Length: 330
Image 1 (tube, rainbow, N blue to C red):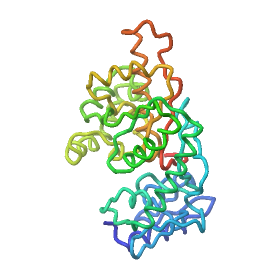
Image 2 (tube, rainbow, N blue to C red; image 1 turned 60 degrees about the horizontal axis):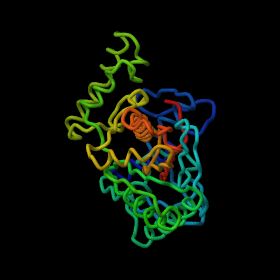
Image 3 (tube, rainbow, N blue to C red; image 1 turned 180 degrees about the horizontal axis):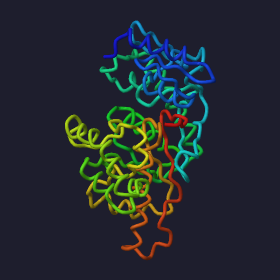
Image 4 (tube, rainbow, N blue to C red; image 1 turned 120 degrees about the horizontal axis):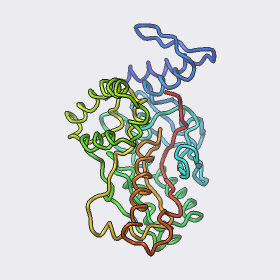
């Protein structure tokens, strides 16, 4: 659990770092950072603001839903916002909109909804019910305008994806009755499998680090992260454990389809269909991008076994997430 004093100190630093001509981060070295770097630093260190469209009590570590303001998170009842830039050719629909600089799972609302007791944040049953009712109403607005044929759930450590899945299943009975929800069909790769993908000549990693010297230096930076995954994550790859974070963009294949004969038959029906991906939060889009690449690549390979199909691509791939975040420089 994060000490209350630490949270209050992070909040104080966030408020102080507000000048536009450069920020001063009060660490041992008193480093002067550019505005963009400082914003990223604040997100990495803090991951929270005190006004979010919800009320946050740093003394009791409680999160309370409110319609009184939308200063940090816009929870108003309207169609999800759409981001078409993070992943080319893919629309990412965000149920709640973040109006300020918050980072992925570090913010109190996500932690409270996930029931992540390690972070200490909690939400009462009454407030959780209010939030879930709002989420379901927004999902209803989304499903009315966006008919889907397949919905694929990305594996997640929390319960938010399951919550979104169950709500979608209920709502889509009315708007997309033939929609098929596929849960548990995508798996996270092991560290060894990800390393094999990175070693391929046409991988994003090898394209970026295109000499032996560059690759060696990159691996020297990454080896501690990969070892940590072996030690604390059961050998399963996790973007969150990759440090420095700028290397995450060059590790693009981290998911795989489960080995299931029935799934293969289902995938053969996906060309020229609308596909929806459920991902609880989208920060830099790395995991979501990996899922999109996996679906596109797998469907394109149908060509070799089903030559009667004329279109070897889905009609569309969209993403529905609880939160997405605008991109910041590393």
